[in-house]
Length: 280
Image (cartoon, rainbow, N blue to C red; front, side):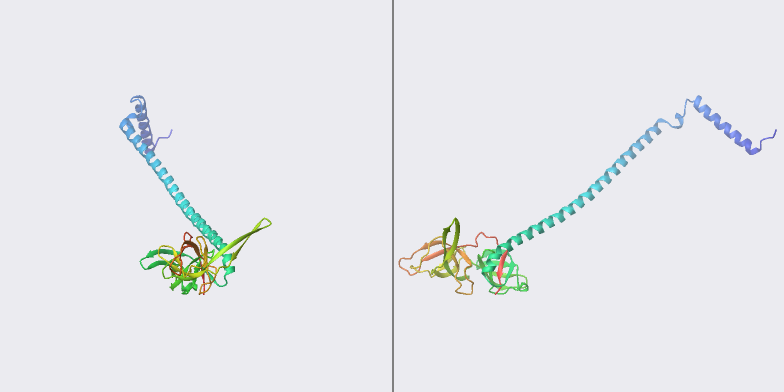
């Protein structure tokens, strides 16, 4: 029988000792609680609870970040959609305006430029009206500004590179030759035909600061009444048949030669965001 070496003997003694210690802990001390006391259990339980809270906070923070990114993306998409909708609306309005201009551009020969008025305010010296077209668009002094329906707005008086100043129709410095234009209606076979009748009642239309016009040089013999339509006569630099307004007041002067006639401008109440500039 061979004998254990010194190293084997040492290992055997250590193994036996460890076995004895485990036996004593189990059966003499009643378990392993003395190696893991209550205060340690509470500490590790609290630590684990805090770790769970941190885990939840981290998870919620990640969710909030994802929601923030999603919200930012939705805002971006909404902005793009709003821009597209706005552009589509602007194009639709421009198309409607162009369709309305077909009639007037067919009646009045010449070249037209689309534009708009972006400022209109009254000053002590008259109206300050700015047009969003200038020399770079081909606009020049004396160009006539009308609406798509042929309503007279005014005349360009000063031109800059990107914009122009407009002499508004109700400005005291504005003048144009005008005449009364009356329509007669006749019915034939269930349809209605309208034609304009000529009128010899002519005068000089002048602007006022109270949003009305004077119709000067109307004699007592001239036929004019409230509600009559006044258009340009074509006897000056303005083309004929531009709509000026309707007669709003007539008073005969018993001792004088001329009547007192006032005109309500047709441009009142009209949208001037889009207008036509008649190039001269």
